[in-house]
Image (tube, rainbow over all chains, first blue to last red; front, side, top):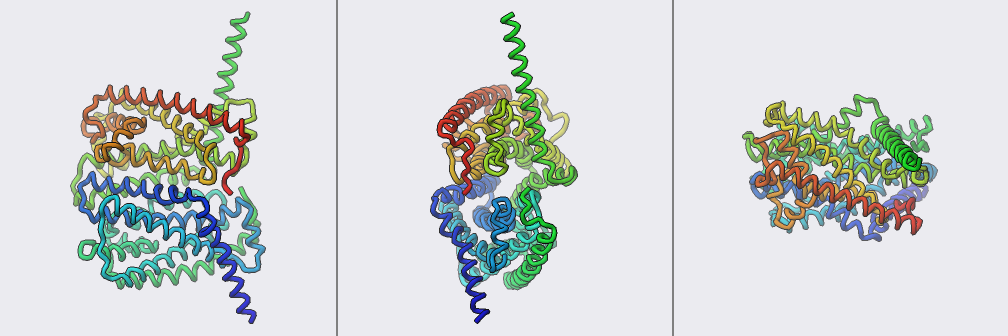
Length: 272
Length: 292
């Protein structure tokens, strides 16, 4: 009975936290411009780089996929990892701390809300980009593609929670660190080119970021026979599954540890 | 006596402008850099541009399969100078937003007996200073690691120096224009500077020659000083080895167009800022917070 109540509380907190991200943010339609046109502009710039280089068409497909993936990475870093920093600045973090559900459902709600909103935006980016540059894809293995995507996203948001727990402790450094994790991650994970181009071992090292293997596996399915793979799809899927479990466990452990440290050192309500 | 009084008054007002500028510069630099130690700040400043240039270099090598060409020099120079736009133009707008919505100090700064424009220019140039390290390291990386044809013999100081100064003036003017727009923008004000930056990244020939763009966008890009600035910087650094967006134009024409466009944009930005300031004061929304 008590476990049932606890689960209900967790579920309600999760839905409550995801509400502003799914429903609230859609009330103002300006997101349509800022969240689709804006990432598309950056993506289009890279498409023109390949056009200037006279690259084959599949490279344009790479860039469009990379652009959509950027939306997920930005969401995880700015709206998951750094979110507690914003909440601290806004004075909400203390309120979250006092709630009887704990921080985990809040983070789950943030992930759920962020995921739904970002998925919608990523679909728009891929659709608009593909229409604009006449890119076509063949996808014979839809269930496998969806499985890879799902596991990648679970691992990615797990990583987001790991960062969120670390940033719970930080002040302005959090903002700068998130800023730092943009271009270097786009490079290491092969957002705009096959990650194999960096060499096998570098690509394997970058696999700690779930998007590296996720993107490579999805590209193998979309551009079958043409994409220089890092590892076979099945192996990448297995590694992704392992990384997802690892990040979820690590996130849970770190969240508890960092919350304790932040409480002990009195940093939870320290704004500046 | 009257003439002397006017002279003293104008000297004082110039002194006050300078003092405002200097203090704003110092403040901007502190905000920008004092969150960590200098070495970490230097590393932080150069990692993003280096990441950017490496992405482009890998894209190039993937397609060119190991061959080298003038396009690498194009990538390196564009990526080396882009941080000035991000820091000075976007930074000025973000600084105003931070003053208004985060630190909540805008009303005190604005009501102080200082020139608010001098304050904004000081903050913007402090941000631009932090882009210098990124520029230097990116160019050195391009020269020594990627092997772009950047030598003392290819550098043309008479093109490079005036172009650099004009470009910075143009970037500050664009920052002032975005700052004006912020008083008209609700809720998404934080994202507006980034949106403008992304549009300019696409339009201004930062990472590919504007000749690749559709005709309409090419025309649009020619009206933006940044396009001519980057063109002049490439000519000033790489000389004859530069891949150009406007191969038909002479150096003098590029510099002349840049100077003319910068002047037009400065006047336009000044006018837009005056209008926005007047409207914001009339409506009482100068320090209105929008990030709900």
